[in-house]
Length: 76
Image (cartoon, rainbow, N blue to C red; front, top):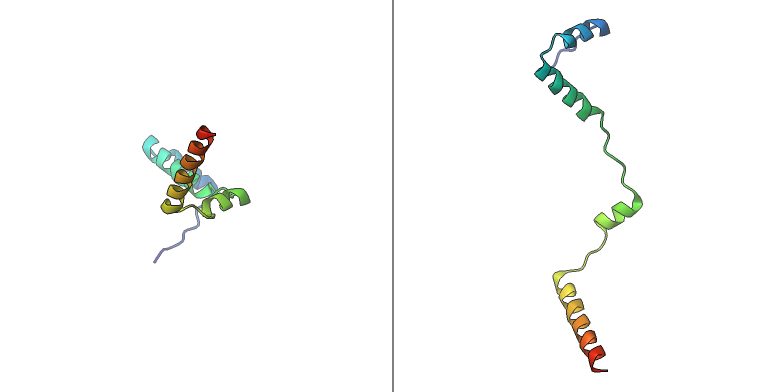
């Protein structure tokens, strides 16, 4: 169970000023983490991250086809 306490702003500033540099840095890091919203992804980004991908078997077939085409071109 958490108890909520109302601390006037000026009193809070005074308390923060009394913190050690290490504690201030830690507090600043905590506040920055809370206030940083996750960036919105564009529709293109979503498509690229969640879109279809080739299986290893399909990639192998494509590579073999490319080799065959390249051999055919060299013969002509």
